[in-house]
Image (tube, rainbow, N blue to C red; front, side):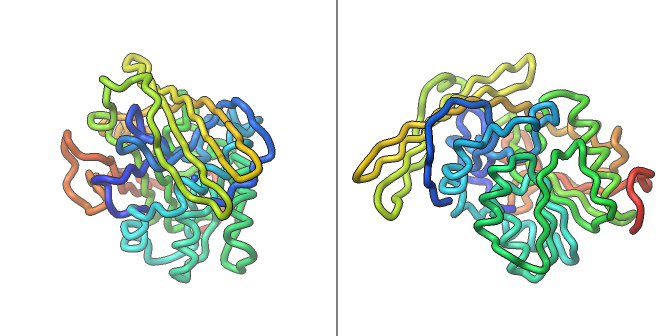
Length: 312
């Protein structure tokens, strides 16, 4: 995904300090959503985007903020080099593709890509961004209910996508579905923030500006406040977007909750779902993972074939 992890926040949702493309806002609203990559710390964003608990997929928490998500994260490329260096063959399955940032980079490199997201609004923005391409497939579905009837040599869960699974059942169902869609020698890449370094507990509840970007005829600013429930391992966010144009101003708010994972918790979860963890990096520069690392970049492969999908 991106290649950097030191500095610019790169997670769709990064925790208390963590922290979207061309807005044409049609209304204001308060919703429960999930993704934002650029972060205030080093990790807010990301959901990912799409990786929510399937029980939430019946509604679209990004309905009113997808355009801002796109504006906020359109320039983020820290993780791109990492993915392009690891992914050599397609088709590639991107779960939590959001508005198509990572998908676009993979397409530009000549790879066939399937982008999956549970948000109709995010998928809609991705279609606008990517247009028609014979090597592109975009599907609106949740990770837990994934059923594509084919296998992929590579699957990517970018920027805290896995954090959108708020319950253990959703995590297990989602990763089991991913296992069923990987070839026997396939590779799974998961990018999440390191909980040990993501939270600035002294700033909990403080509204901080995440980004400010100029539009053709105005400016949009995004702010957020976050609360960390350490016992539940969840982060609650209050997001505010202010769009100012010559003829109007628009204030849009959203609320969302993510569940973070620690390194060995993630490794155990992957083993439970049939994966073997091959490598864990601590940054997009592929530094070894340590307690002060900004990311947990996990590379895993299937332990055995899954009976849930046909074909190779």
